[in-house]
Amino acid sequence: MSIIAITAPVKFSETIIKAYNYLTGRGHTVLTPVLGVGLEDKHEELMKLHRAKIDLCETVVVLNVGGYMGHGTYEEIGYAVTKGKKIEYLESLEGGVFTLLHGYQEIMSGRLND
Image 1 (tube, rainbow, N blue to C red):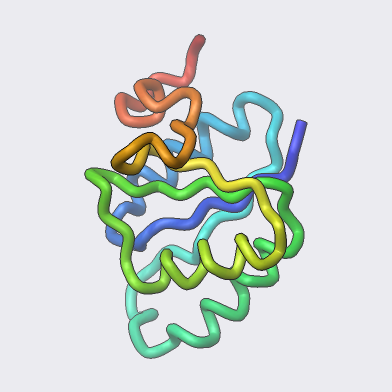
Image 2: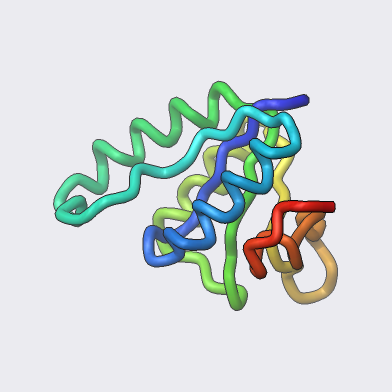
């Protein structure tokens, strides 16, 4: 299997956990954003840490619930593109430019079985 880095706004922490469980349950090594409270003033430190995670991965999975992506998520996508990483999106972007993450329904419903 592969190493995957999840990128998403922290407000989607529940979806991040569901995606982590789904992907690790299928044998992937998954690197997630730091989740917690009181992190608002640590943006640059967290971005540096997440860029290091992107360097380690083969694929970046963007959890763009409802199409929403925050500023930090856009930064991480841009970084991943410059590093030549494969990028998968939870929800396809308009025009079908990007791929749809396999297992979308299982992640959103919390079901982990095939």
